[in-house]
Length: 82
Length: 359
Image (tube, rainbow over all chains, first blue to last red; front, side, top):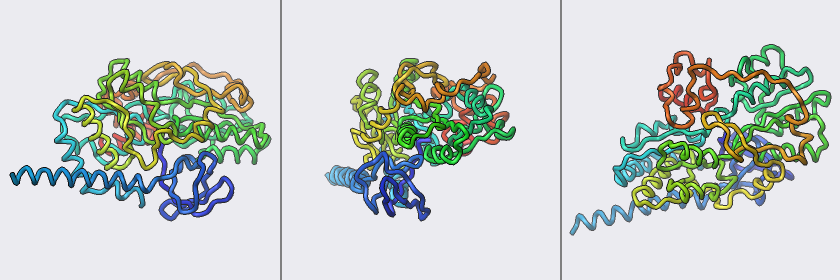
């Protein structure tokens, strides 16, 4: 029920948008979300765009994790080296 | 696919599993309260990847599963009215009521239509002015704003034959009720898409009152494992709070526009949850201002007496007290093609997910 799919906005017409998910295009309502533009990725739920997906935050989640790992490995190496 | 593949990365998954194993050896029970998480956890086999000290429980996160039989019986009663078209999300149609289901009524000639969106139900109402179109509004905070938008649009377009039968519910009262009942939960994997709408503040009472952390999680393996790691870390450090793992879509303040739409149309009321009984201020009723679109007020109907299924332990499964394979009906009498209880019907039900991926 709460499943939502990342979809890319192809075009906008008033409060409706044509979105693409994995190449399949369909119409979604923009009634519940402001400030979106063509090429933005949005979450679609029961025909409504409910949030913009932040590329920055997505990369940050993956990057922070990798960085943390690198730091921990570096510390481990230093400890072993002593 | 973008925003999916990178969160299924095997190297990241392995790294996270290593971190989870090293963070704590305490016995930990974590509960997810979103049907999407139930499904993803079973699909990706996450319980089999985790160290033995970490147990995952499924909570009351499947809207179809927690919906009362009385709601199904009333929907069945509506479907028997000659001038009514029932519009519903697909899951609900197969849920057994006391003596019938929408699917059975459809086979007997009732006009029951599966829709993807409330907008489809509005379109059906426009195309059938001589019929009364009843949309079955189920779901948590993720879905309630769209039902609200449907009612809002019906008013704007002056539709007089569109009605919503609301069983919408909100999540936090159920999360608190489980701990109040004494279910052992050391951390909540909090629902990602509910939180897209509500923001993170709705869970603040859980760590402050109960000392149980909440991490709002995405739905891919890396998301879920990272959330489990964050919860384990909170437990190890004895520092319980609300954190957001699913930052690419969940903002602390949520989607304010959707919240406003929900608040415009709905008001809180006490509501009944399978397994938990009646919880104060846990359901959403349609406000008086929009009562012309409220099926309960506008379409009086006689509803049969509710009869619960014998032997079905859906209620205990929804509280995380029992696993689906503890039920003597599971995979024998009760299967995905012939479900006895609601938890086997919905894709998001624990029994359905176990039956598919973990039988």
